[in-house]
Image (cartoon, rainbow, N blue to C red; front, side):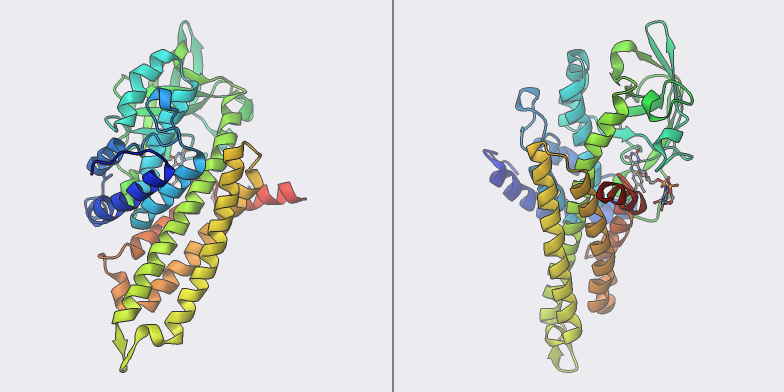
Length: 376
Ligand SMILES: Cc1cc2nc3c(=O)[nH]c(=O)nc-3n(C[C@H](O)[C@H](O)[C@H](O)COP(=O)(O)OP(=O)(O)OC[C@H]3O[C@@H](n4cnc5c(N)ncnc54)[C@H](O)[C@@H]3O)c2cc1C
C-alpha cells in the first residue's frame, strides 16, 4: 500500500484498508504461531501508524488523541492484540519524543517509528498489579546514574521489545512518590528477557516479562524523576482507558457485521436466520450498546484532545465498553451457531481480547473505585 496522508480522514480510510488487507488475513496465524505480527507492524509503521500522535517535527503525523483511538478501534476489529501491541510501541515513541533529552530521541525515536525497534511500558510485577506502590523493582543512586534491580511481568510487547520505559522505586517505603521512570535498552547487560508467557490467546500482544539484574542507567536516561513519574502515569492512563474502550467497540462492531452477514445467508427450517427474532434482537441489543459505548469514547477522547480532565469519562467509557464486549461477543457467537467458533472469523479471539481489556490500564474493579471516589 502506498498512500499520501494529508489529513485524519485519509489516515482513517487507510487504516480501514490496512485492517482488511493486512491484519485480517494474518491474525489467525499469529495466534496459531503464538507470536507478535512483526512484519505487519513494520508495514503499519511505513504508513505512519506508529507515530499518529508523535509531533511532526519528531517524524510523526501530529494528529490528536481521538484519531489514535479511532484507528485502534478499526485495527482491534480484526485483532485486538495487534492494536494493543502497536499502540504500546506508538506510546513509547510519543513519550520519548515529548519528554526525553535529544540524545535519546535521536537514538531511539526514528527506529521505533519505523518499527525497527518495538517499545513497551512496564509497571506491573508478579506481586504488584493494581497496587502500583507495592512494586519491588528498585533504582539505587550511584555515581553517574542508577542501578536497577527487579522483575516485571504481564507486559505487552515484552516478548520482543527493544526499548522499555520501566518504573522503579527509588526509596523503599515512599509509595508512589518514590517511583521514577527510566529508559531501558534490551541489548545492554543486565536486561534478561523471560520466555513468552503461556497465555490462552491473544498472542499478538506479545505478553511477557523480564528481569533487571544490576542494569546500569546513566543519569540522563531517567525519563521522569520521583514525584513526577507516577503523576505522568496517571495522566497518560486516561488515554489508554479510552483507546481500550474504543478497541472493545471495534471488536463488537466486527462481530455485529459478521453475524448480520451470516444471518443473511444461513437458512434454518426453510427461513433465513436473519428473519428469526433470536438473531434480530441480539443484533439490535448489540447495536444499541455499541452506539452508547462509542458516544462515551468520543466524549472522553474529546476531553483529552481539549486538555480537560478526563478521569471520570475515561473510567466510565472503559467499564461500559468492556462490559458491552463481554455481554455481546458471546451472544453474537451463539447467534451464529457452531460457525461462530470457526477461526476464519475473529469472534473467538475477540472473547479473549475482551477479557484482557478488563485488566489492562486499570481493572474494572479499580475503575469502579475511581468512579465512586469521583462522584461522591
Ligand atoms: C495481556 C496483558 C497485558 C498487559 N500489559 C501491561 C503493560 O504493558 N504494562 C504494565 O505495566 N502492565 C500490563 N498489564 C498488567 C495489568 O495492568 C494488570 O493485570 C492490572 O493492573 C491488574 O493487576 P493484577 O492482574 O496483578 O491483579 P491484582 O491487582 O492482583 O487484582 C486481582 C483482582 O482483584 C481486584 N482488586 C485489586 N485491588 C482491589 C481493590 N482495592 N478493590 C477492589 N478490587 C480489587 C482486581 O480488579 C482484580 O480483579 C497487562 C496485563 C495483561 C493481562
